[in-house]
Image 1 (cartoon, rainbow, N blue to C red):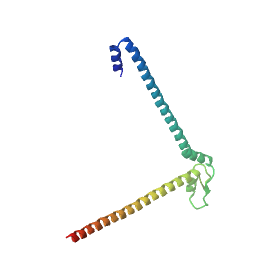
Image 2 (tube, rainbow, N blue to C red):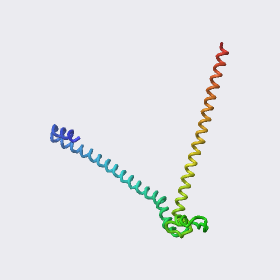
Image 3 (spheres, rainbow, N blue to C red):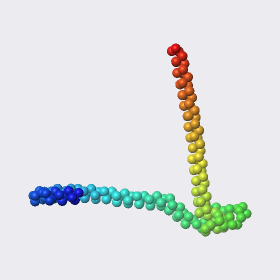
Image 4 (cartoon, rainbow, N blue to C red):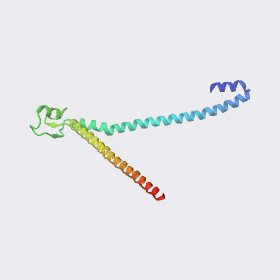
Amino acid sequence: MMKKVRATFTTATSEAITSKRGDLRGIGAQGLTQHSTANNLKSFKSTFDRTMTFLRWGGTNGLRFFLQFWYAKRPMFWIPRGWVPSYVEWILAFPRAPTGSVSIQMWGIACATVVQLVGAAVVAGVVLLGGKQQGTQKEKMAMRVGDGGGKEKEKEKKEL
């Protein structure tokens, strides 16, 4: 681009150079406004992404961290004495709940595990049911193709 501009200035007269400078300034101003608009959009997008990431994290993980901190010393529920060995009671109460109870951290781990297992079971059920439905659709299509072939043979016999 610069080579073209230099070439036009070296071959032009002083009056033409003055008018071309004005044209170039106008083109440069347009490019500058387009560039600043693009920068404003990029800036807005990055600010929006950062804000939404913070809100999403705060609504999920942040809330979980807050609840675990707030209820750390309170038991979620008590385990009847003698149901599990003492070391299991200690693990279930870990890190700060009273021994013989279940802490919010352990309860959260148990709930997350159950949710993950139920989700996997639902996905497996959908896949299995989807496979059976696709299999029955394939059988129906095969039956239709078979029926169509029989009808064509009957038409051929009638024509002869």
